[in-house]
Length: 371
Image 1 (cartoon, rainbow, N blue to C red):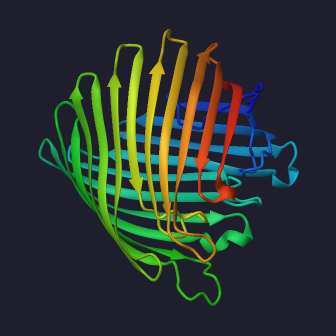
Image 2 (cartoon, rainbow, N blue to C red; image 1 turned 90 degrees about the vertical axis):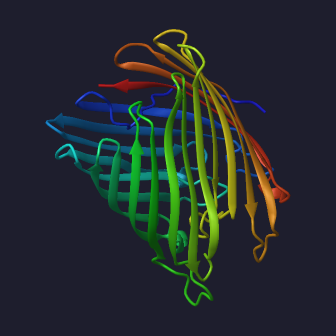
């Protein structure tokens, strides 16, 4: 299987340290198995992007805004051409030594993979939250907050997966002088699917409660550990029962120029989050970064994921595995305005269902322009 790469302009829409940032670009992709099936079916497509970001600090206020637009154009499947936007905003305030507030909004969007849906569809997720933190002494804090999430699909055939979610949460936290922290959080909320299938026997709506512990710990001067461990309960017709969610991230600075990262995640997605809807997902990943000079950054990564699926009307209960290998990701800072980026990736999916058993190679080469 052969991977091809092309010259491109790529841009990130992350908020930069500069007060105002403008980024323009386009990125070329070559995908050896775009159709995501046992029959190899390659595709070449272009992603054009434009983004602006504003970051302002004054007194004890910190405000950041950012928005980006993307356009996908396909060489052989122009019926899949699509445009969408993403964005972020936050406002953090330290009103005094004990009272802090934070408000945030984020919109993430993506064009679906062929395995998830064969037609054109963009999944957008808007996440808004607000919280109040009260300091209780030098190291203790109490946080009260609320969160609202809305997920939508651009394709009408998939709007039965659109949902609104409302949540409130309370957390107590403890921090140390070396910037380590530990918090205990209780979350409670409900998810409503706003376009249910007519005459459905059961609905996907559910209420939930989750208790979780979150930590960020400086083990040594070169080693940091971050983790989130949670236990949840869902009450609904289809989405019912208890489960576990976990995220563990370990970072080790092997030297001044090399960083090793190990992470593990475990989740039990609710039915309806995607059309794929695995009942459980367990993923491990290793990332090695090397910065030989200030303008060069090399990264290699490998991952392994196991997904379990419950029995459906036309599909048996089964386990599927996904192996990913990114032998080289290269970033080179050509100048203050130009940055070169090369990415390569191989993905192998193993499934007892023939049409879900495939592999593919993807590569891209680009230059980011930052003003």
